[in-house]
Length: 399
Image (tube, rainbow, N blue to C red; front, side, top):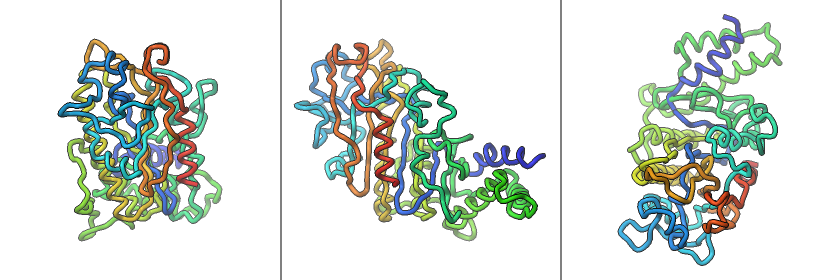
């Protein structure tokens, strides 16, 4: 096997199986971390935060598909509404986040979306995660939206980025140095073939005197070894084995969704390990709710908000400056469909949590829910460009 073939097998494919941490990616830089949570599937923003007394909202949705007031499962009133003279509330299952809104550690920006009003999951995700603004140019050739804000390590003693799904995380495309991790960190870091795989890499890259220093294959191979060694060296051990993550007693993680729990706990562990973590990207899927939305949303919001809050409490207890931003590719239609769900829409919500209680989002420009105020008479209108909002936030947090 040629060196380039082995690099492709190990560096871009096999390394994705090194540790089983699904739907997580990270990039390194000291003292501050941006955690990006992607709710894949098109989360229904109007079932997560809404003006509950808006007559158009009440007329177009049955009670089980909207946030309600004055009942046992009433929505949670925000201390500062996003729509003037309206009773703005969040989903009752998001109760772990309420006091963060009250203390100024949490914000939301409603009616935020792509200027390209595509209803395609794949197109919307590609535009959102790339640095391209529209489909007018080949999107695949553009870097990820986060890449311009991540400064590569000068010393080589930190991880520029890492991904936990097979292949490259689109938001981080364009960064030149990183590793792919898939699975639980407690099992350690190993290459395909364990010690044999590591020995092959070391023989080819760490001790290859004949290869020029500018050889990109040599550089990536050496970087892979350095980054694996860094994380492996920082990981806490008992009797030589990496231990399961033990959160502070004051922090409670939701255990209903094992993959989501493990991904969030791994981010907390990596931030606490002081490996220079700058960016962590996590996915939580299941938000494409064309049918039976009520029960699905209740479960998703509960699991998402509980572990987002747990992560916040975890890193805050460690004194780590961390910002969390939550996005989805688009929202969903105002009107419910005949299957107890909602179909693809346009504008959605950007959520932000910040351990320093900084105001990182602009105010919502609420467009209204009357038919003539909707996009194409069906969807919540986009009044702020989500790509610009994310870029401004990343610029402020990371640079």
